[in-house]
Length: 434
Image 1 (spheres, rainbow, N blue to C red):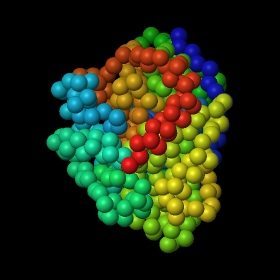
Image 2 (cartoon, helix red, strand yellow):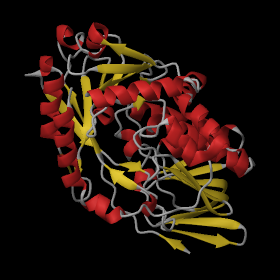
Image 3 (cartoon, rainbow, N blue to C red):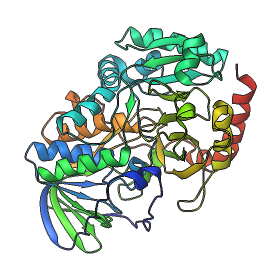
Image 4 (cartoon, rainbow, N blue to C red):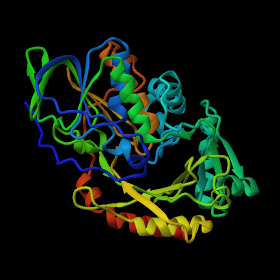
């Protein structure tokens, strides 16, 4: 028997929550029902899995401890960035071997296209734009590493291009960086609206959604799985756990297979035309190469969303917003004096090898998680792969390898030392800038 005690849900306050169309909460499950597949977690991974399965005629039930996009999916920066982070092609090949290196590389390079094709296929209204992603280098060391990596990635199908000098300054809207790389397939969505659109499309194809329905236990009843909530249960052939950084002990060891990090975002009030048009004038999203990363995007109503890494506190409390505002005004001096109207954050999942993980610990039980800051695009890949496995694909035929659940080495030290680590990484970033 697998048991779980859920945390009390909290409502995140974000720009996305404030600007998405209202959608009434899904009612809790209050009956004993049956399905072909139970999906636990109504974030991007669970929603993509549910949509694929429902479109194939599968009877799907989605359970969430809060509601659609309550976790990281509704609190992300909303950047649709292809390419997996941190791993060079050479290291990725060493980790995966020939077959899965080719599959994972293809999947990651095409992950943004996969998302935007979904938006088109299901006519999802989510302010989607595929204007490209600009990754900028803060130091000579980062510049040299970036040139080497891009040359290698281009050999495997990437269309990314290097940009420097005046053109870089113009596209970024700042002179703070040495060089940059444009990934033309990148872009952005309004993450809350995108999640709403996925849920709507899945519902229209028969998927059932239940909110405020944390799964307290998973048990086997013969060949079936039974997911029990406080006021109901679902019996199904398959269970997909799609809880990512909000995973707990429902599936033994899953929460310890990742280290949660806490990105935070701030958003300006609508800016004057002269100011906003000087920042990312062609609508690229942007992120930088610092250890304590920054990322930013423009909004249709002339806001700027600016993100970085925060410090988690008890429950869902966060800190680091004052530093983030100062950093935004350093990178973009034209923001000095701007009104900042929203601030929010959530948890993402970091894996030890910086790859997304796919698990099948028991027959009929799947989990997918660990996006390392690339969750908007890569969750579309993982959700698709999970659905393909449910629909009968062999594990050996999937785009991602199925692996055992393993605890991250020294996980407790990494988590409790995060505040000190962030301070030290900021110091290193400062010392090597330019």
